[in-house]
Amino acid sequence: MQITETLAQMGGLQSIAKELGVSETQVASGAAALAPAILGGFKKHAQSQPSGLEGLGGLLGKLGGGGLLDDVLAPQPTNVNRGNDVLGQIFGSKDVSRTVAQN
Image (cartoon, rainbow, N blue to C red; front, side, top):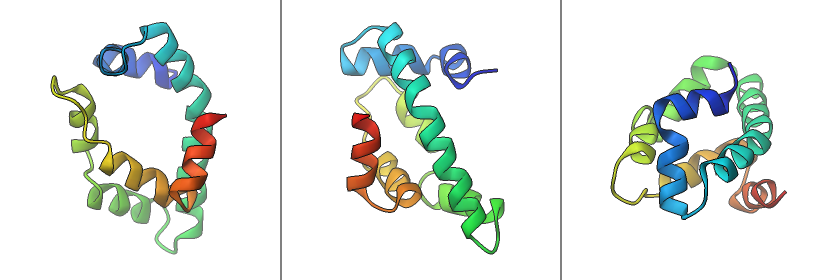
């Protein structure tokens, strides 16, 4: 199953589209384009840690865990700070994560 299908089933695409004021199609396209870079960043982070996937799970847990998804699916505007923190951790800096997002 593709990540965009998972997001669509959970209502994430609709929620993101509503918050950004764009179509679900645009959000799905953006998610499909960004997912390989984000998942690659997770893989690199997990491989670089002595604890591997446990370290990645710990990182995500410290940064909000399942609460990250709850933030996106909630009816109120999403606080982007935790998401930015995750991206900064997996890409090394906010500047790199912004570059990935722009491409």
